[in-house]
Amino acid sequence: MTSAIPSSSAPRPDRLYRRLIREVQAVGPTAGPADPAPVTEAEVAGLPPVVRRYLRFMGVVGRPRVWSMSARFTGRFRLRPRLGWMPAQAWQYNTNPDFARVFVMRVRLAGVVPMVGRDTYVHGHGHMLGRLLDRVTVVDGHGEEFDIGELTTYLNDAILVAPSMLLSPATTWNPVDDHTFEVSLTDVGHTVRARVFVDQRGAPYDFSTTDRYAALPGGLVRAEWHTPVADWHTADGLAVPGRVAAVWHLPSGPLPTSPAG
Image 1 (spheres, rainbow, N blue to C red):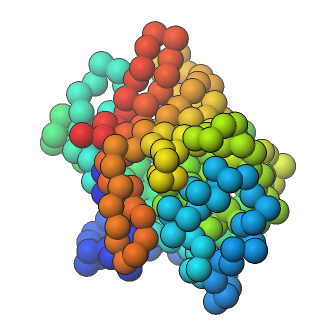
Image 2: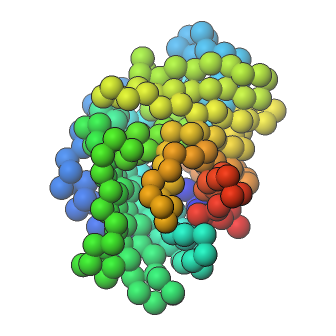
């Protein structure tokens, strides 16, 4: 999808945003209190050089750590390989140190019939719910696969939007080479891992993991998942991803579920 926007730059709340607020109030994730002290050079000095370069590009050093964030996305989405692209809008809200994520999305099947989707990760449990006309349930996923998958998505969100949320003992960082590092996140007995690829500036251009499950016609399949980033811009002095795609790498070939363009 495109246009990840920090909450301070977000447009006026719309109907979907109000839906997000209701969902957040319903599941009750906890966050904060915020630490007003900025992230210092000393805090990141022990991290691998490639990770420090990434954190500097993202604007982490010298700013207070993020304890919650909201973002808005617009773009296109599809559910299955042979289905057409659908216009999509989404809002999300993430918190820490109790890791939580609430994501709501609206798409129009065949460009006409609205479907509202909700993904949550709260208290170690993931849940995916999709309803046609916001009334008829067509997707209702929960269990260990969703616990792992939603925690991985939280990690992806933090890497691309708010990495200071990961500066805690729950996260480990390991270098691979001058342009790649591995990151892992542990919560409620689950540990998820990913590789992050950065350019010379430290800007991430891809995120890769095998800790998510693709919903295929035959059921859930653990598969390699990427979120390549086409470009970056600046908002309120922070690096913000512009065009971001989501792509499953399956034995049958790549399956984009959200294109960058």
